[in-house]
Length: 196
Image (cartoon, rainbow, N blue to C red; front, side, top):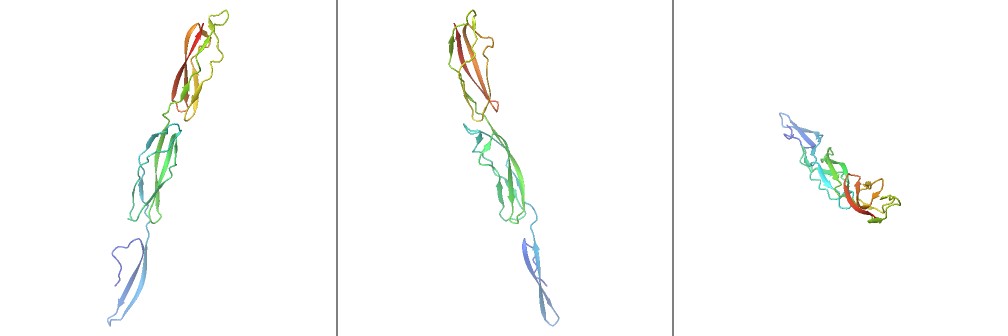
């Protein structure tokens, strides 16, 4: 006879065998059965997340990643971790989720986090200008329209204006200044040039 269980749990089980002869004499021997958990747990990462960058910053600090779904053949507690940074920069970041069971088996899943820059740059046009027409002409060529003030949370890509290249005619001309940041957001401001 033996005291072997119907099913063997994960770990080591010692079985005792007993032999009995017709006279009632007995002897025993033992056997060790070791069952290992070699099955990796399963994990499903949360769905992809899109968030806006924090105001005045080129990163997001409050991204709700959600909760990964996990399962395993053994009921022991699973450990779930991820490599998410403290702050997510504008653009795409892949977060790797890892689940590990009590036997040390682990598997991973990935989640995409996209942070967008939705903040417009700021622009202050130069001060309005009043000048006389150039001598012998009905226009004025202005080399320097003044100081333009721009700023952005991520960075300025370009600044343009629609000032006439061949000079400003007598009268009022509204110059439109446009600033575009590195993510395509644009803001405008106007400056009035008066030529007498």
